[in-house]
Image (cartoon, rainbow, N blue to C red; front, side, top):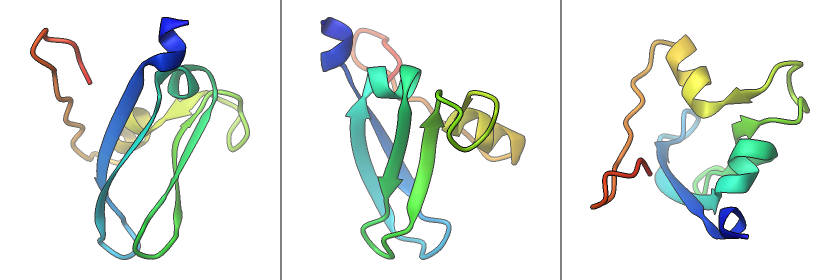
Length: 84
């Protein structure tokens, strides 16, 4: 049950309209499902994670996508050193 309650946060700049925003989602959906966030500026949809193969045959997440594009991925850790 704890995994269902754990939340993750992503802060990002939309690649379409350059709006900076942040969204939260469940850790379980990121690790086991599909996460799509909507930009508040242009309403574009951004794929954050696809563990079910809806958009690609392989499991994919934003970390992998960004690293493949040569973009920087920054992790923030809480006071206990846990990666957020």
